[in-house]
Length: 575
Image 1: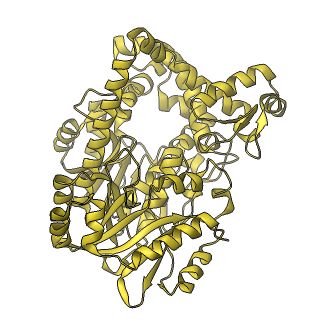
Image 2 (image 1 turned 135 degrees about the horizontal axis):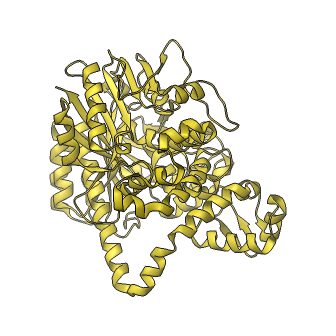
Image 3 (image 1 turned 45 degrees about the vertical axis):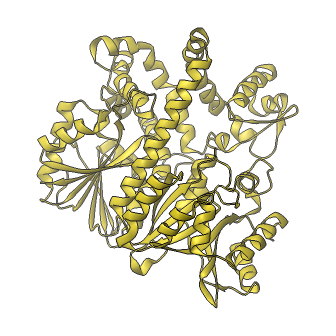
């Protein structure tokens, strides 16, 4: 079934593609700037109008478009919109199915309707859920224009410099125009405080055949820079509005949120609310806790949007879903509210000496302690896998893994990232390299609710070892995902030296790290820089610091591509 609101939106868009014209469409999006629209129209062609709908099944949209007289192609997976929806609503990408269904008018091949289909009744039943909010905000409703490779940079620069449209993300989708190397997509948002334009569209999509990594990296940097400026503006505005004493009290109580979330996981509150809304007393009865105290906790969580409130009942949200006991994010939350929380009690020691607070509290450094406590080590690996799964969708748009032949994941934990890369490189084999205790625990499915790790297969070799001593040779693509920030400069130099010794000249090393900005603003990288000081004794670094470190160990840093939540992909080559 297609809901009435979606039927109305589909019908409206069908009427608009009847008269889709490149110049007129650009002029609408540019608020009547006919001169700039005419210049842009010389470098692109309007190809389709797009929107998101929420039927029971993808086939229902296919049938609707065919009955409307359009020629409909086979549905293909959407990587970009799925990642955007997941990020917008705090969902893991793997929990969302998004397909692209395209219908074309037989007599006008440039008059097409592109429909992003998110099937399943669960996505539209909640009045505060994905369907309701997407229909209201029209966040993915846009007009798309195709440009030739030779015109791509011209178009991007003209849009950025001559219009009020702002870079708004993008990426590479290997499923669309697959025979031409996929499609590189560049989104631009209408600059009007997040509302749709007068013509009913929120965004402009510019796409070009092939994987245009350099252009995508530049576009991503523009988007990140814009978000940083917006964040600085909001922070400055808030600072001016808030008296110093009030702001200080807000800052010093941050630890309360960490512990409140970890206790929520410990009690199983997210699981209790998974089926239906409950009162505080009912939640307390399910989890075996004191009713008044549970209600006070729920009220606190509601203030941050972690739970929803309807009268005296509390309901689940996408954030709370991440705290269910089978979720890897629940493991991450328990770790931050447990051993990490305890270690921060000696942060003063870390600042005074430069040595980790974790080692001061527990008598062993971070990784050695996990080795001695396998259950906690497993929790750490699952916590790392939580953010890795979200990161993977962004990596697909930032780097083309399809040409890799032998991928070596150094310090790869349970193999979540390696598994995803091999899915995107069907001709490749992989090596999962980590300490013996990690490989031994990770080569089988151990914990209830664990996704399990990559097991030894004809495509994957499990290798035990210490990367400070030696790493596997003969790879053409090496991965260091959030490894370098765990160690000081001397240790990183030794690790990178071992990598370079194993690699042939010209082979690639990809490092995934949070890169510190030169701007002194609040950011994930600055937060994790202190986390590394407290827990591992390591640190985050600037681009220049990474470039020098790479050069000193025989690598050339080619580019840094922002990916997600402060994480960037550092692409380097062995000299």
